[in-house]
Image 1: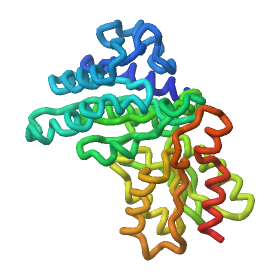
Image 2: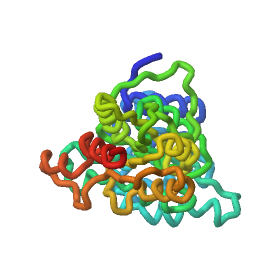
Image 3: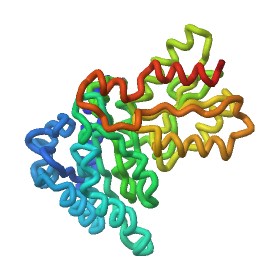
Image 4: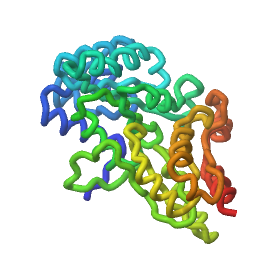
Length: 324
């Protein structure tokens, strides 16, 4: 195995898919010679040239609109939206065009487009550059939604998304870009819709997404010292959602805590809680607990930001609430 950062793993996935299929190309603000706002696209511009690593104007509407057109005519674009917050600018292109075209044309047109989106707080980037909006897109039929937590997952899931014939939202937490992890030498794709158990346990199931997977694992380590065994389940893709893995874990532990960085109100944790309630209610020995950000805009001040977004102690508190 090799050790790569999350950003390096994404860049390697892009490089391999661009080498394997000349229909794959990257576009977005500063993704070319500059190497990307967060350095993810790196040297791809030098390797593939400006035709396949395209710098664009500062217009999310143009980026996604052009990508939808390119995908509909046979290309496999991988556009980057610099911050998840800026998805608000191109919602029509995503929700009313990309998500609907295959259905409205009876399958004769496909939109094999993968939208890469840095997401989340932690950089003191304030209210307009720190949101976690992934739940919005799970509500839209026609879009797939991916949120990998590890470098290996990021690489395998991105390759799968690029090869998929449907538009996919690929959310990458900004804090994860520098985190290192092992990449199996034989890694190809990781199928969309398959969750991963990051840690096995027997007393409570913690379903966590993206950066919160790491905080859930930290909580699990601390709780183990107190005799509480925590199983950490990472859905990896929010749609399609691997309900079976989540439900089997809950049936084993009889308790569930759901953690995401987005605000609790309207967050995807509510959907997971509903699935558990509808399909495994009789197995529950305690109410489901949700852990997420407070329902306020993300502050600029670092201390306030840390107060607003969920941390390890919040997860520990929720686990103890359902196990005591």
